[in-house]
Image 1 (spheres, helix red, strand yellow):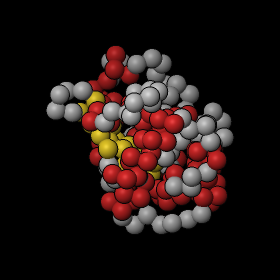
Image 2 (image 1 turned 90 degrees about the vertical axis):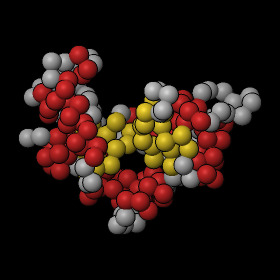
Image 3 (image 1 turned 180 degrees about the horizontal axis):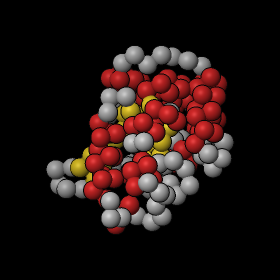
Length: 196
């Protein structure tokens, strides 16, 4: 079974995890501890990652255990419902810097993290604030290579992503949570979701 087949089966698939089904373990045929980049099949892992990220039926986000998680199209509406819910688990305890960044993303519509500096007195780097928003599913993000050769993230509101993705139905937050919880349970007992 390849990574796309696994994703179609489970609905969710981690990029890498030593216990749960992941792109890395599916590609090499066994769980991998440590960095996949030093594995003898690292080129195959990279090729599988690229293929999955370019597949039109795949969304990539930080969902299970705060790790890169691939989401099959059949669960996109569930992710969108939960991500746009602005529930207590998403908003309570959000740092002032992350609130500022969330406001900026909402106002501008798309932000590249390496082009933005936080206002004076804000604790944390923009990259750290972006991770805080990602863990709470408050923004959709993609990683890019900048012209300077570094990595940065492009942050956008989920509504912008949904408009571009097209055909994402609107469901209730509770229904979205239930669908994602069922898919996570199929992965295994350690598949932790951010609201749990």
